[in-house]
Image (cartoon, rainbow, N blue to C red; front, side):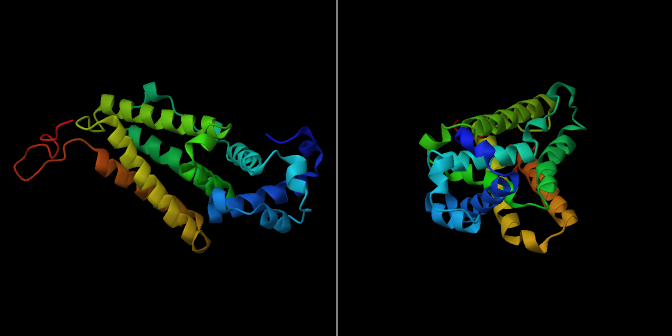
Length: 222
């Protein structure tokens, strides 16, 4: 996390730095992101990065924490025990849609949160990255288990594979959205998010059968 002197930086300068850093990390990835370019866009001196942060990873982690707080990600939760077969998928739809709409006016907040998916395992051990990864993984796995208990998610495949399917659809949708964000309004963003969850539902729903009426995966040796 940043050195304590960072808190003394004027709020408007901190916000400008966060936005410049988030845009750089989101567009170029962590490894290729340039500290000099970030500082130039933030209108700060070249020595500022190491005055306020230990290294580039420290700046990146601070930006991630800022984005999490601004989007109130810790508030996104559901009482899984209270979900029913009727409310399960509508709840998942809302959980996915809400952060996107919260970041509509400042899309860099959401864009930067997609970067950790491509980081090295070593860097992912740093906070708040480790906490963010664990929070998301735990929520998705708990949703899968609850969905299976309610009979709305198939149980004929390993949970790791179901998780991978959800993650793949999620990331593909986010990547497309980020490249088209400027041409979309709030309604279009919301609709794309909802259709992504509908695609997840279609892939994970029980009862997929082959032409002979047997489960498509019943012959897999797992």
